[in-house]
Amino acid sequence: MRQAGRYLPEFREFRTKHEFFEICRNPEMACEITLQPIRRFDLDAAIIFSDILVIPQAMGVDVKMVAGKGLEFDNLLKSPEDIDRLNCTFDIKKELGYVFDAITVTRHKLEGKVPLIGFSGAPWTLMSYMIEGGSSSTSSKAKRWLYAHPEASQRLLQALTDIIIEYLVGQVMAGAQALQLFESNAGILGHSLFSKFSLPYIRQISTRVKARLAEQSITAVPMIVFAKDAHFALEELSQSGYEVMGLDWTVKPQNARRLSGATVTLQGNMDPCALYAPKESIGKIVKEMVSKFGTQRYIANLGHGMYPDMDPEAVKAFVDAVHEHSAAMNAS
Ligand code: CP3
Image (tube, rainbow, N blue to C red):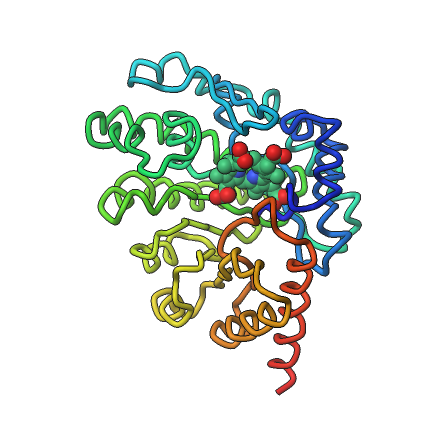
């Protein structure tokens, strides 16, 4: 959940000197930013500094971070014919090798202190960014494709799936010790569209990444699926081949446990806005969360990313409370 970012003064300071995607493309800089939250907080893992939008970029959709404005897109997909001008069969190592290099450099720099997580956006989320160009409250342009052009949509989702699989395998070969798949735009789909245009690809990714790693005699790594607002699909997601299921804050811990069965680890799900509460309240909210999930098969986390106006001290209060309450629960 965007551990690094604009809520950290050291990140903002770095960003006065370097553009966002320049940092993503420079392994030493990406490594430095990845380590910033690790230096400050007692975290149990690092997530490589990058962005889900590097795949659309490599396919030919221009994505820029414009100072004071945010993300700007060019060459967005307007109609299914536009799929043909996308580069769907690019050399992953050539175009995205900078992410692999960042992972290798960071893995060395971490010296085993905490494991390093690699990630990718899931196909539907990437498709919706390639059509909408940014977040939209309705995603109606992207959803229009699913109803008006279902076959072309599936062709695009399959092309993205094939790329994501190679990209994730490459990250493990470069040193990633866990992988997280972000289906951030799952909620807008609802159950029916989700079953057709998201879940099958999410399943393919876990199955084929694992098969590819086994084929090359590379040890498997745990895989995490986070489908934001997909409360309607928790049971199916928990059976989609991932060791961990991430949860947003709208999900009741007991329901997630009941629906996900005995083998899946759950991750989440404090409302990020709870970080605006006074420190003592954060401690209480964390205590309640950990007691509901239990300390086993559980990774305490937020239910989504932090916002730029959040106080790093609140993040520290969150992390410290997780350690305090889980240790107390394990001791009792
Ligand atoms: O946690 C980390 O440090 C890892 C890095 C990370 C980033 N993006 C860095 C980032 C991760 C895991 C992401 C994933 C990502 N990117 C997602 C999936 C997770 C989620 O939030 O649902 C999505 C949807 C994106 C797309 C994206 N990138 C958005 C919506 C934004 C904000 C744009 C804006 O205008 O504010 C970004 C930019 C981004 N990615 C930032 C960071 C630190 C802020 C960039 C900056 O201005 O410096």
